[in-house]
Length: 143
Image 1: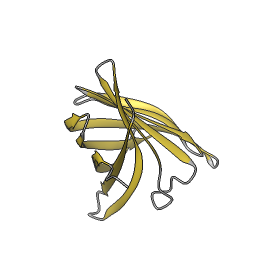
Image 2: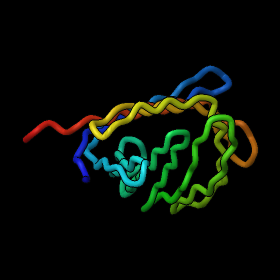
Image 3: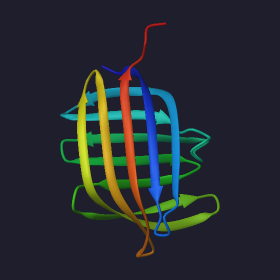
C-alpha cells in the first residue's frame, strides 16, 4: 500500500578549511514497502538545487540506494564501509562521484521513521567533504 508522507531532509557538508553548508527542506512524498524494502519517492526542492528532479530511495536493512531522475540523473548506493561510485549528470555536464559511508542508521517502519547517513564525498578520486544526511518520514496529517 502506498502512503502519502511528510519528508524532512537535512543535508550538511563540512569542508577541510572548516566551512559548512546546510540544506533543509520538507516535502510531501510516498512511502511503500515491497519485498522487504521500503521505497520513498518525492520531488526535490528548488532550494536544494533539485527543481525538476524526482528522488527515490530504496531502503534495505544495510543499504540505501538513492536514484535521482530528471534535470539531474544519479544512482548512488550507500553501504557502511564500502566505497561506491556513480555518474552525476546535469545539463551542464557530468561528474564521477564516490561516497564512502562511515555510518548508517535506519529506523523505518510503514508508519515512517528516520534514515541517517554519514559519508565522505569524492569527485574524480579527490576528497571533497564529509557529509551527513538525515531524512525523517512521517505519516501525512489528515486533511
